[in-house]
Image (cartoon, rainbow, N blue to C red; front, side):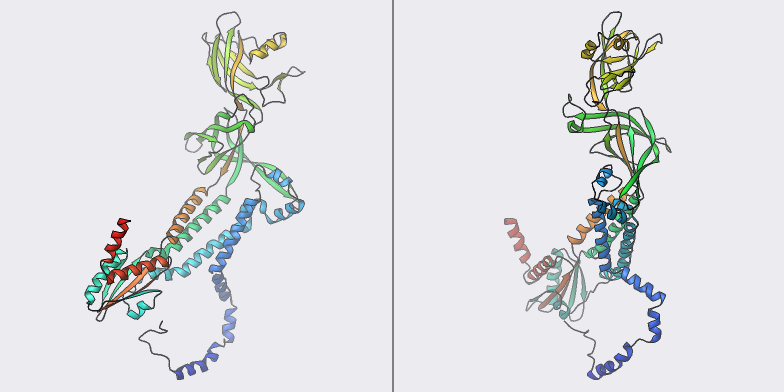
Length: 539
């Protein structure tokens, strides 16, 4: 490789000696330059140089990844299971984690500082290195000498005595196009240069990766501005507020107090239905006997008046206006989603079977209205003759449905409907019989669909979630573009009876070397490409 350009002359020894004599004088900084190095502009320049350095960016990235791993390994305060997790920690772990902000690391000051510094590093480093990368795209070296071609990392030389330069140029152009190179031909007096290039956009792939990372960081910052709360829902209830648990660490961060903060939603949530898929329909509504919980809600936007129905269940959250709804928990008190009743007139006559949904109503043939008011999975009456719920609320030991009956003449009553087995037990108890009468009908509970009394919905406001998704999609695509493709350049210099090829690629140099060899083979023998194609077809 030449140490100077062909048109430059070597420096004479006397000139070198003269430079050597003057070098010490030039290298000694003056007092004025020393003071300038310690000045405020000098400090700022040094800080910007550090901030734009690639090693410093890698260091910041390692710190950011470590912080994210800490947030995954240590439970965060916004999780429902955090109180139990906190109790199982040792006093030393509580002290260290609390002081360092590990329990809420995504909202701690140094996490946002890392995002800011890394973003600035990416921006400044891109500004520093972009002109060089852009020069590969805009500035093309369209002429080259055989010496230049043969000093490239990948090089080939083809000797073809007796062939003219025009014939070699034609062969080279055909071969380069066959290898998917975009070519430009430059004619000179002594030689012809064919410049071939492919994948030049790959030089800018790193900056596309930088844009993707900045998009992710922006989304992460927006996410840290969000909040998470919970909302208990029963069918028929409507709410436009959720409760957020606030953990206040006290003293040496070994104890914490939980407070509840009420947050207003920009829309109302109306529960229309609750359901539970059980493994064994005859079993309890415990978690061990559950496949899924389903919560149907109607969202009404307070600003636009728009209404939409949504279904939230265990493995399928619902997104609306930057809010994400999760199925979090259920009440341990059992209820019924639907009931099937048999109404028998007390005065005699045929019975009627009807079905009611929770909070729903139906009519009998004579116009009597029946409203499903409540359900008790374990009907009991205390010593004060008040109806209560027993301890086994999820086992449905004595299921009973509380009704409201409105006769055609407007007379209303509040009877209870029991199972036939329980009706037989209370047949000799006048007080128990009295609470089921007064409506003109005797009601029997035939069937019911088990469901918890209420569901807890977790509502997460995450304004940056879509930005993060876009950023990660961009990152995957740009990384594929950067590492699976490469910028390849080749210079083919044709002279009478000889062709010199040389070039380089920023990635996948083995593949590029194979392409150069194929170009050289086709220049030497134009039928080499056809023979190779025939062999591939036979295989």
